[in-house]
Length: 178
Image (tube, rainbow, N blue to C red; front, side, top):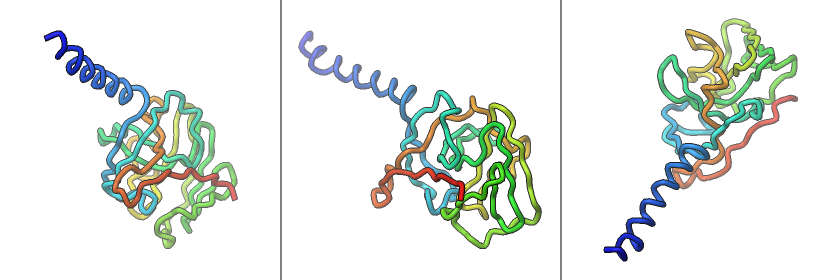
């Protein structure tokens, strides 16, 4: 009985506890529910996300997972505005942050055009997000309660695509300023 305990039960319990600690504090795997980040991330992709304990370390261009309380679900979007930033979205779909035009070559559909100019002043401890598939993304432009996500609702930064296997690879952040 003692041999079974030390040979089987103890290693299995140790592995389970270790896996729970890693998931809680270091990494989480997220399945992408929509095509709002197309073509960077596709619907059904599984992402490795590193937990973020200090959102101030995130930078514009990072792909972030956060709790979207309005719909009570996790969203995956690209970080566009950090606390104190001014985000402007023009009629032709171009975006400026603090007066600098973003290099948004990753945007899925280039024919995106908005019907009106929009300007956002990102409050302290808040963040502004857009999907890479701007024509089909429920993001900061379309949220009902607030266009911003609080730092405490940010879960982590998406680092790698794990699945499907033909899409495995590191997810790139963009240095946006042109």
